[in-house]
Length: 635
Image 1 (cartoon, rainbow, N blue to C red):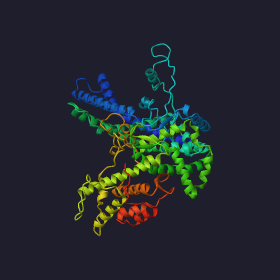
Image 2 (image 1 turned 90 degrees about the vertical axis):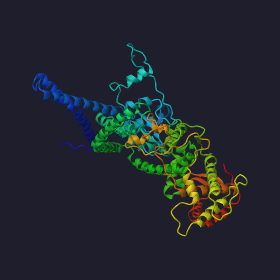
Image 3 (image 1 turned 60 degrees about the horizontal axis):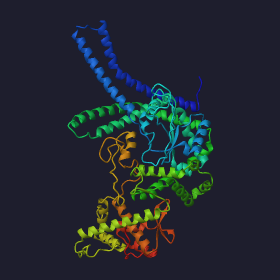
Image 4 (image 1 turned 120 degrees about the horizontal axis):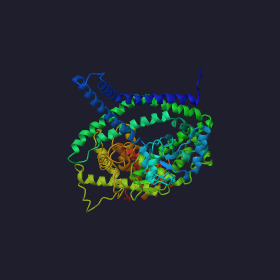
């Protein structure tokens, strides 16, 4: 017996698992056709006189019951099959790259596929994530998104060359656009298409060309098993079931249109979608283990095949993956998120991750050798217009991780890194300081302390916004608490927690509440549920401005109060001590005193907020030269 080793072993294992998935599909089809087969046997036996007779009432009743049941089962099976076939599988939001805009990148991928002896990917796209994979986009439900494949991103338009298709009217000649799409989308005329290669945009900007080629080798090697008919059919079946679960979940939770027939529509709609979801989940549970084993076998075969291409360099590239992930995470959570909350989105996130990782290599002794890599050719040079691609992926990252309008506008505008300190950091501090003083004014008007002299009216003598006023109020609130303070928050903390953060000034839209996603990966990717109007149609993720992957959980009251007090201190330092707002690539907004960053403000602020001890903060203010009694400028 011949022993099979290497990539062929993984491919054979993947094909065996794919056949197991297809057998489950065939079994489900056989179960659906079994009542129909029984009805055919009874009808044929009755016609030939082999089973019962035309005058036998018992056999006649049995024939009608079996025939009716068969028709009902066929109807339900056809409904489930229609939902599974027509449901749109999850499509990762990406920025498509046309070959005209990145010929060198396409040439690199094709050469890599030729060395690996596998089909080349059909297209290349970028995603704002530190990952790369192959994605099948040949489902007919995705055909209508060819022109606008990724809404919400400043995607570089892909030009579709006109094809000469033999005319639909009987003679040769170019067909119209609709006829051409209809002809080319027929299953019998659609040629096998390789999956799309999705590349993480931070890799293109941080990695060198040789490192990117070594990193993409195992991914591109996966196109070989992906185009196998059995594996492709098994994947389509599993993705269809997953999409059907999401469709059923949305259909059950969707409110029917108002009208006289709404009750009847709801009475039929919800049980129908519940049945479709039950069948889809049952089939998914049956083929789950086989599908997972098939994907593992495909990955093993691709990894084994890619060992012949730049194996040693791939080890170095994998180290850069971890470094890029750390820098990308810090850039999003510490630098980009404050700008997104201000209604601004940094338009050069990928260039920023290079600056963040360079700063990390300067601070960390373990990363000293990484700065020498910057002299080599970066992978982003493979793009004709890296700035346009960076802007597109930056907007897509803002939509994925924070939510927001699909296109730039007056209240959702880009910001360059050079203008970040003035347009984001300074505005953020002054808006938070204004909000803190506004809440103090409201509480002094309505909740004066017992025994204290009533504060004058704000209309007659407005209280100037000073840092000393904030410190005195927090110190007094801490002094009024008992020796063993309860777990309830203090007055400013409760006020900040009760009032939601305001949207950007002049904004006509608001961030929506986050909804829990329905079951299924497709539903999670699409953010199941209605849009702002509560409707059922359309794409909720596109229409609802809701982040698909929130970066951080909601902040607590203590954290909000500490942030606002820090903003008040920074405003006072800028106005009275000559400090300036700055940007730290790893920590976000920074206070610069004498051109150097002061990172020792967190402890004095926490001592004031949590313990009511203003000693450390006053000592810090005296060291920097801040005058807390002077009014600060607010927005």
